[in-house]
Length: 212
Image (tube, rainbow, N blue to C red; front, side, top):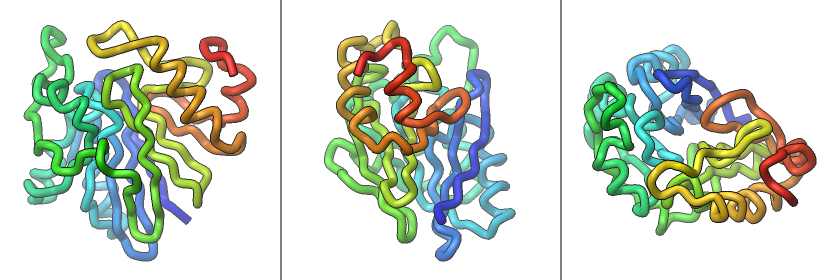
Protein backbone atom coordinates (compact mmCIF):
# COMPACT_ATOMS: atom_id res chain seq x y z
CA UNK A 1 0.00 0.00 0.00
CA UNK A 2 1.20 3.51 -0.83
CA UNK A 3 2.30 5.29 2.33
CA UNK A 4 1.10 8.90 2.67
CA UNK A 5 2.34 11.21 5.41
CA UNK A 6 0.48 14.55 5.43
CA UNK A 7 2.29 17.51 6.97
CA UNK A 8 0.63 20.88 7.55
CA UNK A 9 3.38 23.45 7.09
CA UNK A 10 4.03 27.16 6.76
CA UNK A 11 2.13 30.41 7.19
CA UNK A 12 -0.71 29.30 4.91
CA UNK A 13 -1.16 25.91 6.65
CA UNK A 14 -0.37 24.14 3.39
CA UNK A 15 -0.71 20.39 3.09
CA UNK A 16 2.60 18.83 2.08
CA UNK A 17 2.49 15.11 1.29
CA UNK A 18 5.41 12.76 1.77
CA UNK A 19 4.59 9.63 -0.21
CA UNK A 20 6.51 6.37 -0.51
CA UNK A 21 6.53 2.81 -1.73
CA UNK A 22 7.36 1.09 1.58
CA UNK A 23 8.73 -1.98 -0.21
CA UNK A 24 11.42 -0.10 -2.09
CA UNK A 25 11.77 2.89 0.26
CA UNK A 26 11.48 5.26 -2.71
CA UNK A 27 9.75 8.51 -1.79
CA UNK A 28 8.58 11.78 -3.28
CA UNK A 29 7.39 15.04 -1.78
CA UNK A 30 4.29 16.72 -3.16
CA UNK A 31 4.42 20.47 -2.48
CA UNK A 32 7.33 20.98 -0.03
CA UNK A 33 5.52 23.93 1.49
CA UNK A 34 7.85 24.99 4.29
CA UNK A 35 10.26 23.60 6.90
CA UNK A 36 12.22 21.31 4.61
CA UNK A 37 14.06 19.68 7.50
CA UNK A 38 10.78 18.58 9.05
CA UNK A 39 9.98 16.74 5.82
CA UNK A 40 13.38 15.06 5.57
CA UNK A 41 13.24 14.01 9.23
CA UNK A 42 9.93 12.23 8.62
CA UNK A 43 11.45 10.35 5.69
CA UNK A 44 14.60 9.44 7.59
CA UNK A 45 12.62 8.08 10.54
CA UNK A 46 11.04 5.59 8.15
CA UNK A 47 14.18 4.76 6.20
CA UNK A 48 12.80 6.31 3.01
CA UNK A 49 14.86 7.99 0.32
CA UNK A 50 13.38 11.17 -1.14
CA UNK A 51 14.37 11.32 -4.77
CA UNK A 52 11.69 13.57 -6.34
CA UNK A 53 9.83 16.81 -5.66
CA UNK A 54 6.46 17.37 -7.35
CA UNK A 55 4.86 20.82 -7.39
CA UNK A 56 1.13 21.06 -8.09
CA UNK A 57 1.73 24.73 -8.91
CA UNK A 58 4.13 27.57 -8.23
CA UNK A 59 2.55 29.68 -5.52
CA UNK A 60 5.17 30.22 -2.82
CA UNK A 61 3.34 28.31 -0.09
CA UNK A 62 3.69 25.11 -2.12
CA UNK A 63 7.45 25.10 -2.65
CA UNK A 64 9.08 27.40 -0.07
CA UNK A 65 10.59 24.47 1.85
CA UNK A 66 12.43 23.05 -1.15
CA UNK A 67 15.76 24.82 -0.63
CA UNK A 68 16.02 23.69 2.99
CA UNK A 69 14.97 20.18 1.99
CA UNK A 70 17.65 19.74 -0.67
CA UNK A 71 20.22 21.22 1.68
CA UNK A 72 19.28 18.73 4.40
CA UNK A 73 19.52 15.87 1.90
CA UNK A 74 22.70 17.29 0.35
CA UNK A 75 20.97 16.82 -3.01
CA UNK A 76 21.10 20.09 -4.99
CA UNK A 77 20.41 18.00 -8.10
CA UNK A 78 17.14 16.57 -6.77
CA UNK A 79 14.63 16.36 -9.66
CA UNK A 80 11.80 18.88 -9.45
CA UNK A 81 8.60 18.47 -11.47
CA UNK A 82 6.50 21.50 -12.45
CA UNK A 83 4.38 22.44 -15.44
CA UNK A 84 6.27 24.94 -17.60
CA UNK A 85 3.28 27.31 -17.68
CA UNK A 86 4.08 28.10 -14.04
CA UNK A 87 7.84 28.50 -14.49
CA UNK A 88 7.84 32.31 -14.53
CA UNK A 89 5.61 32.32 -11.47
CA UNK A 90 8.18 30.15 -9.70
CA UNK A 91 11.08 32.37 -10.74
CA UNK A 92 9.18 35.32 -9.28
CA UNK A 93 9.07 33.46 -5.95
CA UNK A 94 5.44 32.49 -6.30
CA UNK A 95 3.76 35.81 -5.48
CA UNK A 96 5.50 36.22 -2.13
CA UNK A 97 6.32 39.88 -2.87
CA UNK A 98 4.90 42.21 -0.28
CA UNK A 99 3.95 39.42 2.11
CA UNK A 100 7.10 39.56 4.19
CA UNK A 101 8.16 35.93 3.74
CA UNK A 102 11.79 35.22 2.96
CA UNK A 103 13.09 31.93 1.58
CA UNK A 104 15.58 30.66 -0.97
CA UNK A 105 14.12 29.61 -4.29
CA UNK A 106 15.59 26.11 -4.32
CA UNK A 107 16.33 24.04 -7.42
CA UNK A 108 14.67 24.98 -10.68
CA UNK A 109 12.42 22.38 -12.29
CA UNK A 110 14.08 19.67 -14.35
CA UNK A 111 10.89 17.76 -15.21
CA UNK A 112 8.26 19.59 -17.30
CA UNK A 113 4.79 18.29 -16.44
CA UNK A 114 3.57 19.66 -19.77
CA UNK A 115 5.48 16.80 -21.41
CA UNK A 116 5.04 14.07 -18.79
CA UNK A 117 1.88 12.01 -18.44
CA UNK A 118 2.95 9.57 -15.70
CA UNK A 119 5.17 9.88 -12.63
CA UNK A 120 6.32 6.92 -10.54
CA UNK A 121 7.27 6.18 -6.96
CA UNK A 122 8.46 2.60 -6.73
CA UNK A 123 5.66 0.41 -8.08
CA UNK A 124 3.04 3.17 -7.95
CA UNK A 125 2.02 5.19 -11.00
CA UNK A 126 0.49 8.65 -10.95
CA UNK A 127 -1.32 10.29 -13.83
CA UNK A 128 -0.37 13.92 -14.32
CA UNK A 129 -3.54 15.93 -14.97
CA UNK A 130 -3.13 19.52 -16.14
CA UNK A 131 -5.85 21.55 -14.43
CA UNK A 132 -5.51 25.30 -15.07
CA UNK A 133 -7.68 27.83 -13.30
CA UNK A 134 -5.94 28.47 -9.99
CA UNK A 135 -2.72 29.02 -11.93
CA UNK A 136 -1.91 28.39 -15.61
CA UNK A 137 0.28 25.36 -14.94
CA UNK A 138 -1.62 23.81 -12.06
CA UNK A 139 -1.51 19.99 -12.10
CA UNK A 140 -2.96 17.13 -10.06
CA UNK A 141 -1.52 13.68 -9.43
CA UNK A 142 -3.89 10.69 -9.57
CA UNK A 143 -3.00 7.17 -8.46
CA UNK A 144 -5.67 4.77 -9.72
CA UNK A 145 -4.05 1.85 -7.86
CA UNK A 146 -4.82 3.57 -4.55
CA UNK A 147 -7.92 5.59 -5.51
CA UNK A 148 -6.26 8.80 -4.40
CA UNK A 149 -5.99 12.23 -6.01
CA UNK A 150 -3.58 14.94 -4.90
CA UNK A 151 -5.54 17.96 -6.05
CA UNK A 152 -3.37 20.90 -5.02
CA UNK A 153 -5.43 24.08 -4.83
CA UNK A 154 -7.97 23.15 -7.49
CA UNK A 155 -10.68 21.81 -5.18
CA UNK A 156 -11.13 21.54 -1.43
CA UNK A 157 -13.70 20.04 0.89
CA UNK A 158 -16.73 22.14 0.01
CA UNK A 159 -14.64 24.74 -1.79
CA UNK A 160 -12.50 25.65 -4.77
CA UNK A 161 -9.18 27.40 -5.34
CA UNK A 162 -8.80 31.14 -5.62
CA UNK A 163 -8.97 32.66 -9.08
CA UNK A 164 -8.30 36.30 -8.19
CA UNK A 165 -4.50 35.91 -8.30
CA UNK A 166 -2.48 36.57 -11.49
CA UNK A 167 -3.11 33.75 -13.97
CA UNK A 168 -6.32 32.64 -12.29
CA UNK A 169 -9.48 31.99 -14.28
CA UNK A 170 -12.76 30.87 -12.73
CA UNK A 171 -14.22 29.38 -15.91
CA UNK A 172 -11.04 27.36 -16.48
CA UNK A 173 -11.01 26.18 -12.88
CA UNK A 174 -14.61 24.96 -12.97
CA UNK A 175 -13.98 23.21 -16.29
CA UNK A 176 -10.86 21.55 -14.86
CA UNK A 177 -12.87 20.22 -11.91
CA UNK A 178 -15.70 18.96 -14.08
CA UNK A 179 -13.42 17.23 -16.60
CA UNK A 180 -10.52 16.07 -14.44
CA UNK A 181 -12.02 15.48 -10.98
CA UNK A 182 -15.70 14.66 -11.40
CA UNK A 183 -14.93 12.05 -14.07
CA UNK A 184 -12.99 9.96 -11.52
CA UNK A 185 -14.66 7.21 -9.45
CA UNK A 186 -16.82 8.53 -6.62
CA UNK A 187 -14.75 6.66 -4.03
CA UNK A 188 -11.55 8.50 -5.00
CA UNK A 189 -9.98 10.28 -2.02
CA UNK A 190 -9.12 13.92 -2.63
CA UNK A 191 -6.07 15.14 -0.74
CA UNK A 192 -5.93 18.86 -1.37
CA UNK A 193 -3.47 21.66 -0.77
CA UNK A 194 -5.31 23.02 2.27
CA UNK A 195 -7.83 21.63 4.72
CA UNK A 196 -9.20 18.13 5.33
CA UNK A 197 -9.53 15.33 2.82
CA UNK A 198 -12.73 14.62 0.94
CA UNK A 199 -14.01 12.30 -1.82
CA UNK A 200 -15.03 12.80 -5.43
CA UNK A 201 -18.58 11.57 -4.83
CA UNK A 202 -19.05 13.95 -1.91
CA UNK A 203 -17.90 16.96 -3.92
CA UNK A 204 -19.97 16.02 -6.97
CA UNK A 205 -23.08 16.06 -4.81
CA UNK A 206 -22.31 18.83 -2.39
CA UNK A 207 -19.70 21.31 -3.57
CA UNK A 208 -21.67 24.58 -3.87
CA UNK A 209 -19.21 26.20 -6.28
CA UNK A 210 -19.25 23.57 -9.04
CA UNK A 211 -22.22 22.14 -10.89
CA UNK A 212 -21.94 18.61 -12.31
